[in-house]
Length: 572
Ligand SMILES: [Zn+2]
Image (cartoon, rainbow, N blue to C red; front, side, top):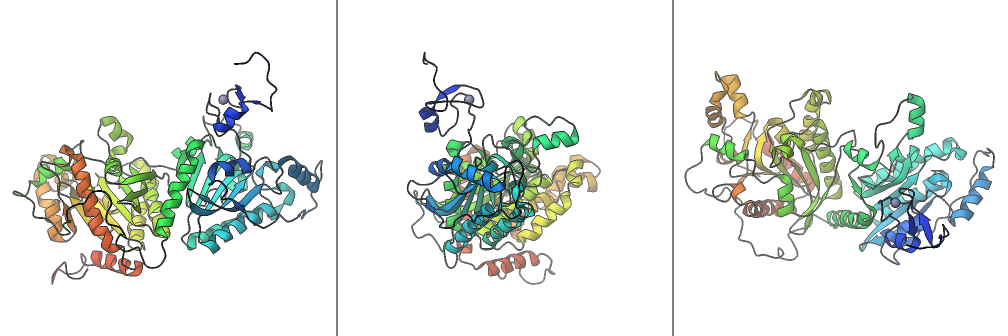
């Protein structure tokens, strides 16, 4: 590009990833991401703020970092000496910059760490400043956004720095109790006490592309174990695969992701009783009035076995198809935060007719490859735990939950049993029966046994016309009660697993009609029908106080245990 050697550090800088020489201005325009190799250079806190918040919206908190040297720490240099050098080198008072701002016009409190300042270490002043930012969020009723970059606790303050993990965590807990969203953005590197507290105990954890996060650093682990580490150890994609973060976001998409999250949190927190029926008429198209009760289905009821085959048809729309067609603005959240991200369960924030909600569903696929990758829609314990995490998050934020059920059943594997499959399903069923937010479940394909129920303890349970919902698969039932598996069609008929049957039994509240002859012939029309049905059943629930909602939900399921005297559909 140029014949003369540029002076590094001024107009040019060298990429730490690919060693390209890059024109400084061009690099900055590209948010300090190398246009050659995609390396995300570390950002100073002021530059990070400039990239994330609305221009001119940042107001620093008035709090000043206290002068501390609690244990008179001296190594080769004294701690105060190191502090002064860090201040001079960065122009910052401490390793974090805190304040309030708007992001996409959504107000929030922020704390942005700066690795240049003593490795972003967590000392008493840093802990105090982040705590004040959290307290400010609580006072103002705003979400809290944390951008982390830290080597861990600040050794020069001894155990007092360790205490900061608890101090900040308590402030996060208070926000959680108040139903205020907390988001952390992990940037490279985030380690030690910061990783093991506020970087990961927030509601949503985003990892910037290229970020590494862990408690112990790779060097320590290598020394202790004497072993080489796996490829990509502790990188953002590694963390995603192991269920530790919700998503990996390239720098240029970070602000947009935050805007989407803040918008959802704000919608869930509208003051007073639940948001009533829409202020404005449903957007865009005027839709026909929706039938809330089972519509009269044309023609004679289909044969149960034929319905089973339709419910399993590989062309049938999947949860991700519906998220694309019936819902808008899906922001997928990943991971159970315990060690896994199950591909058979997908979930995240989405909108339905402009209304923010949480959608969670089983995911199958249309091709053999997709089906295998998604374990045929059979959730692992990590999948159930991811679903649980998202349901609880929705409740805290005041967002309704929509579940889309399409699974042959829970995962029949050794690993699933070792990881506590039974308890994971049990916990979801129990938690759904106490979840203080509206829940609408739709059986869209196969509703297979406990794996299905783990997503279907709902205020309203809907079922697509050609879906099935059953305690066991017809094949499984035939193998046990008939002489051979070939009796599956008879078993299917005996099990009463079709939507009309289950509506009659009161297990299902309404049937969602499918286009003729079935959903896979017209996925768009199916998506419209699903959307209308969900809206029709959800809207009345939004006015019901959460305690009443939970009481009625329990009554709904209690009646199946009662003796069958009297009518089934009595009180609702
Ligand atoms: Zn590069």
